[in-house]
Image 1 (cartoon, one colour):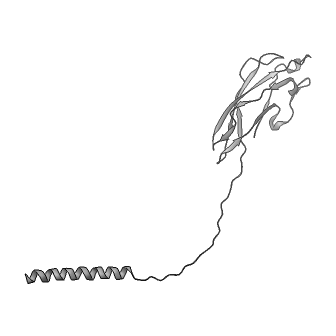
Image 2 (cartoon, one colour):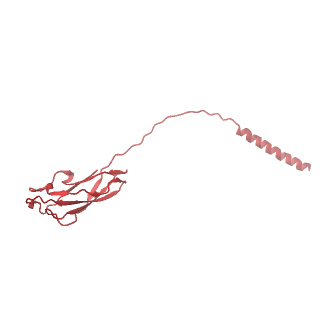
Image 3 (tube, one colour):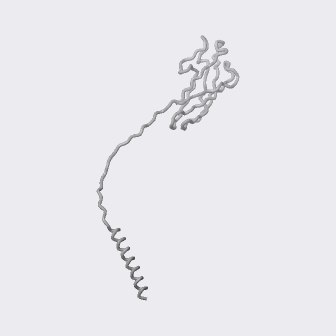
Length: 160
């Protein structure tokens, strides 16, 4: 029995010494300095990119004074890497760059009218595409419009 008691005492001593070491180590003080710091950084912001507008061939019967209309389908594409807001699409009878168009003497943009485009305005995601249509009509001016026969009427699209 004394061997058992001695073995138990040894175990108890080991446990007490281990606990004391843990407590002493846990209560050990660590020294340190406090500090602060400052820094700067930067990021770059892109700019807007012009929308890309493409149109399809007109559909419908040929235009004539006061006659049928033609419809032109078009797309507006956002080539930017960010979302861009499409607020308006203006379509006029004009040359590329928006310069005035006259087919021949006696036939001009004043002989035609373009209705407001049908399109969903709003945000366009990067590489996003929005489709729309526009209708063109030849106005009956009440005077000879023979100069407009066979004319190819250019449409100028301005997306903002």
